[in-house]
Length: 30
Image (cartoon, rainbow, N blue to C red; front, side, top):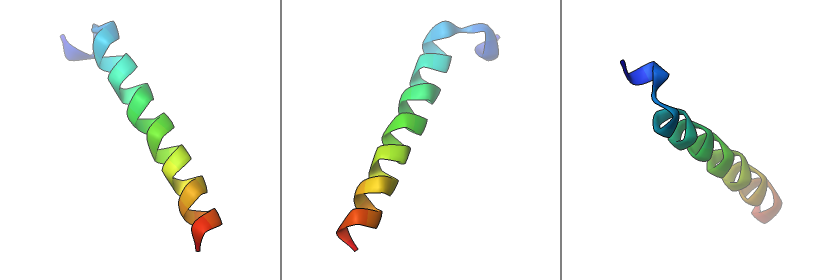
């Protein structure tokens, strides 16, 4: 089961975190 895999959730959280950082950087750059 994919949704019970902690590694999967760590990856999901990391992607969301990176996306949030990129969004802030993009907003500051433009």
